[in-house]
Amino acid sequence: MTTNSPADVVAGLRATFATGRTRPLDWRLGQLEALRTLLTEQREALQQALHEDLGKGPAEAYRTEIGFTLNELDHTVRHLAEWLRPRPAAVPEAFLPAEARAVREPLGVVLVIAPWNYPLQLALAPLVGALAAGNTVLVKPSELAPATSAAIARLLPRYLDPQAVAVVEGAVPETTALLEQRFDHIFYTGNGAVGRIVMAAAARHLTPVTLELGGKSPVVVDSGADLAVTARRIVRGKFLNAGQTCVAPDYVLAVGDTAPALEAELAEAVREAYGEDPAADPEYGRIVNTRHFDRLTALLGDGRTVTGGGFDRESRYLAPTVLADVPPQAPVMRAEIFGPVLPVLAVPDLDAAIAFINERDKPLALYAFTESDATKERLAAETSSGALVFGLPVSHLAVPELPFGGVGESGMGRYHGEYSVDTFSHTKAVLDKPLH
Ligand code: NAD
Image (cartoon, rainbow, N blue to C red; front, side, top):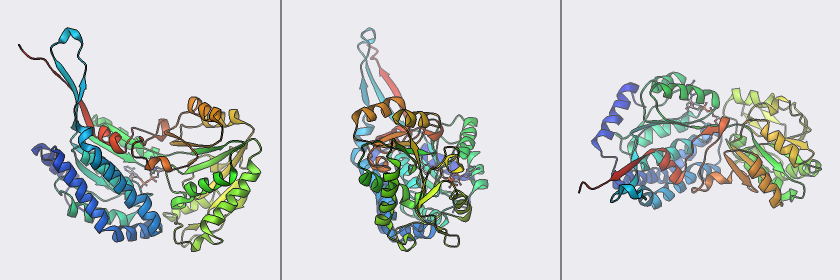
């Protein structure tokens, strides 16, 4: 942790940016390589921190945090030169002879504010994009994942250029103080209430923001879908990180008469994935803190329990739980669940499913299991969401050529791969007409 004031830290980063040293491709690639070394050499320490904060098992911690960031980094290193190449533009005849091009230039000082649920990935994947675009970066990890936050604060300045990358740890007071500073871009991941605070603070300096928010991501299960495969894939996506994933399936809309058979398959899929006693599975996570634990256990009374429902407050263990016959007005259907509780609601047909989705906030992801192209086309044409995924919930965020972001209440802006470089750059128009 730095002991300098927020103003000093930002001034330092701004001074580094002004030297121009972050602009050359070699510097950017060098920083990305240094980050790769950090992730490789410190793998065990990072896995340990993630276990301390969220009970993440080593395999899940690697796959969803360290390995995920390495993939993002590799993809960026591979393509960065091509993404930075000026794009020629056609010039109208009246201006000829002349040349025109669009050029990506870095913005300056970027602030990344990260949440606790994937505390490493969600701090470092935006960092990859911000460095690739040639910026200096201030990272503010989440105080609710203190071990990971401390590791980030200790390691980033050790491996990366400490004058170009700074870490400020802390909670609301520290973040509030940071937000008084002028940044050239603020990249925030977390809940929408704080998203509004961030955007209001950014407005004072006319700073552009990316808001990666959350919400309830529905899963539509169509009549005729293979329910055993469907259940297995929903379970894998839902109970990853004990349901504390922004793109986790939040609830299921079971179309027609699919609900009873689907419920049975979901119970079976949970048993297959986590055994008879999920508490004993080292890869099954824990709830981040008692506040969230109490919030989640209060939801267990809604509907009929198909499987799960057990919990232990002291270890913040909450069993993978499936609820059926949940009324649409039940508390579990009001806000994002963000935990291992999966309500299943029966709807008579696809029209009802689409109406249900469209009556609510635009989700970060919409998932569907269907064998019907007509259903796919209708969902694509008649709903709006950050992402639309058929057949494999949560997987889209690991496709680096796809943009990742929300729409409406689920956020604004996008990142990953080239979309990150776009987010953290200004695309400048250059027109060059010879004088003679
Ligand atoms: P959190 O509590 O860790 O907060 C996120 C960040 O905001 C932290 O760094 C925190 O210090 C800061 N913060 C909190 N209160 C603040 C305030 N008053 N002023 C300024 N900064 C403040 O995480 P969270 O918000 O509980 O995260 C969970 C939410 O994030 C869920 O809604 C989830 O869906 C969403 N999320 C979205 C994505 C995505 O990529 N779209 C990823 C993960 C989580």
